[in-house]
Image (cartoon, rainbow, N blue to C red; front, side, top):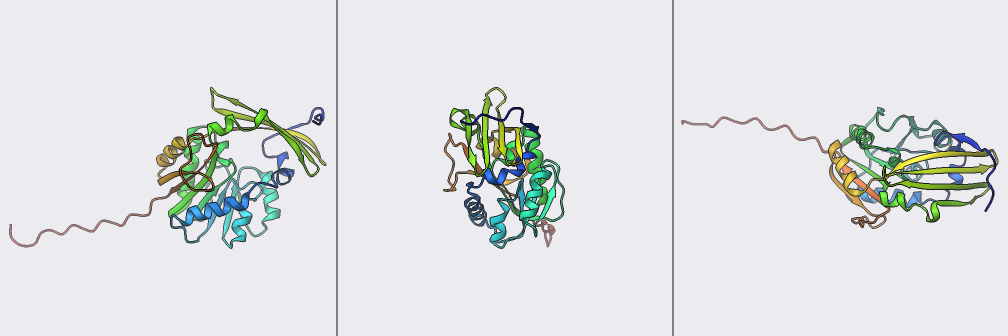
Amino acid sequence: MREATPQPERAEPYTALATVYDTIMAEVEYDAWADFILAVARSRGYAGGPLLDLGCGTGNASVPMVDHGLHVTGLDASPAMLAVARAKLPGVTLHLADFASFAIPGRFALVFSVFDALNNLLDDETFLATCRCVLEHLQPGGLFVFDVNTPTGLRELWEGGAAEGWADEVYYRWQHSFDAETGLARVEAYCDGPDGSFTEVHTERGYDAAVAIRLLGAAGFEAVEALSFPEAAAPPPEAERIWVVGRKPRLSRPARPTRAPRGRY
């Protein structure tokens, strides 16, 4: 084990981390997640159309969608993460905005969010507000597909409560704790790379299937389901991560005017 550099910079979440994020996450299966999202969406009627990557971060989940020839827009709350994404995706429109109150041009056939992005929403009210924003930005019949860590997943995140190693020239040691009373997980992410060392503290809330389905329903989504990866089947009760899909209702046709009965009474 490497000893940590004394007194690393204390950084706000997703600021300094942006400089080393792609190095540390190089093995994450973004391509497989993109294929899964598209398969789930196509099985529910998606036939193409614009996509919104909610919580796009450095753009890793947008890249395979662009490679599929799809029109992608990204949105994130971190300027530092978006700066990396802009260099990676020069042709993609990226928006800096808060998940729970964003208002951007256009309407989308599919909104997707991956890799715990929505676990950063720490209470029902913020999660519900985010879902309502998504609903507002979807086309009628459009789909919302995302993953979340469950409470089980956050409670049992890493064996021994820490993840440690090297990613190229970056040493990382991330320590994890879970508060059963609040249901919140805390990750203290220490990194030491060519540009120096820093620590960011991140907080996440777990969402199980019942809670996610309830909140999407309350926001106005229909046909909401929880799924497992990669089978797209119902997740087991002890699942550490689930995927959720919901549809924005299609516009209802106006009722035909009622004709008065003809003839004599």
